[in-house]
Image (cartoon, rainbow, N blue to C red; front, side, top):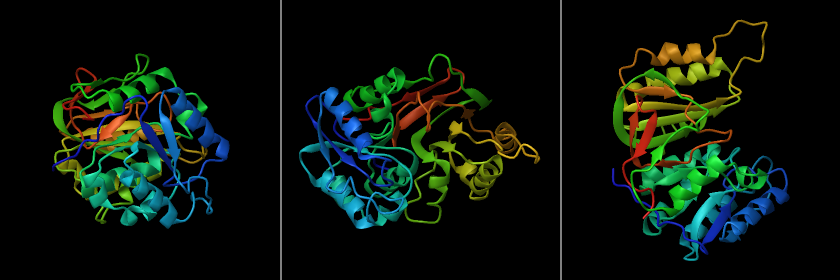
Length: 313
């Protein structure tokens, strides 16, 4: 598919802050995220509805979608960073103006529930977007140096052949060795699977599928892996990247359970495509920012993912 890369960020540019999913616990978290971005040398423009509340959502669907559409239309805004994940992005993907995004491509950053937006942007606008730190999460809590350096380099440097490595003290595990190329697709596993059978399911033919998860029991991860298998995903993709699966253990020690490693072995050890686990992307930090929709090469022997083109222009 033909993808569109957003223009790079430069110091002094304006960054929009949007809340497409849930609201933070307090407005102070947004304000701390804004202060961080200003300290880094950027102007910040929060969305009109960014402080709204509607149950577990950051305001009504129409308002959350409106903020995103207006930011893509605003010539002053050069990048859009989500406040946080949580719940709700799947409710607004049919309210997004994808023709507008094709005409005005911009950097969009978020992860977790924002997986729905990454998939929708790629499928309907061809936009390369970024699964990375968010304003009221990492940016308000004191972003670590590994996460910070990788994030800003990808958004500001238009050079190609960036190589993504885990932090020095964290090795990934290779389930099946190999080298392959494809576009990076995916994000949060349960969010991704919620799009199955919809017009927002991402293009997976010969892709490098990246998945991560948080606070799901092994039997639920097992069920999700079964769905991927029966949907033919493992026969379609070029490689599989298992990110961080945080707190995905049994919470009932008196009941028998498979471990997550056993679940992964059952589904992935017999695959002939390259498969790795414990890749540094997911909910906890330090984390790597991932350009969704960008062509990359996975090399299990070198323990690296090489970006084969620049993520920004």
